[in-house]
Amino acid sequence: MEAHLRLHESNKVRVLVADDSPTVRLMLCRMLEKDDDIKVVGTACDGREAIEQVEALEPDLVTMDVNMPVMDGLSAIEHIMAYNPLPVLVVSSVVDKENTANAARALGAGAVDVISKPTPSSLEEFENIGSDLRAKIKMLSRVRVITHPRARLLDHSIELSPVTPAQEEVAGRKLVAIGSSTGGPQALQRILCSLPVDFRAGIVIVQHIAKGFTDGLIEWLNGSTSLKIIKGTDGHFIEPGEVVIAPDGIHMAVTSGGRIQLVEKQITGPHKPSIDVLLESVSDAYGKYAVGVILTGMGRDGAQGIKAIHDHGGRTIAQDKNTSVIFSMAKEAIKLGGVDRVVPLSDVSRLMMEFA
Image (cartoon, rainbow, N blue to C red; front, side, top):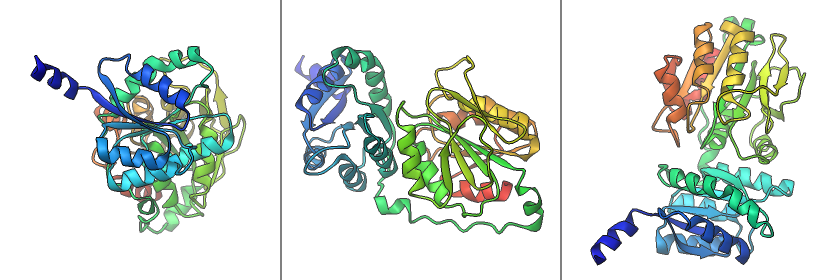
């Protein structure tokens, strides 16, 4: 009987909860352990203690607040991903802009996803996110992560192919559309940092991220690249070298006149904004002058859209399995026959230059 219990325990997802609020720690622990497949093995009240607990307890996953005393969550994540890499889920408040920006920086440092932290006074709000959080933790605990020192993010410059006169003639009419989900912020930073400031095509992006964190993601990316990165607004004309990221809670599309269109349409699927909506509109508007890119992420959003770009004569790229945090989205796009090239993340920007 004792041996059976030990075996059962070993099959549980072992979680460390790091948050400076005792109330939040208690609520998270109680919420997580409502699932028989999850065991909270420890808690930490600051980043330094989180690092020590990770080394001592070897959990499968850490939930991490970003704003903590002694050592903040961002610094702790950088250390953990450099020395004891494991999946980190950021649990952060969206009350102020600084928190959302720090959450985006944490994703860049190696955290795999972010969720909005409910207020400690709202038990009902905690319960509302409970089932989604438990499912997310069980999924993310299986994600394969790599050693990820912060300096390595900016130390992978890519030698880009020179733009030929033939490319220059059509570059102004090209548009690159990118879809990404889990692991996407890191991938986007790597790609955008590798593009020159005079990149001659516009770029439009849907990144699946918890509601309230898009502004922080944009601020963080703007500090990482020489390209101009903005949030999509209705009617905005997409300039060459400009990066437009879809806002929260509404679909983003493009028109044949090269303008952003925000769309309140109902579609099949849980994502809003949807990658498929964006990519299908790019296919219709730009045809053979479209370039579609599908990056790391869970699910199948984007598979139909990238196939539409492919079928209309555009060029398409998928991030490969070895460099993806989760290979599901790219895998589904490849299965549909909509992908021209499957390449490591380090080659995506080079191909974007070649195609655009």
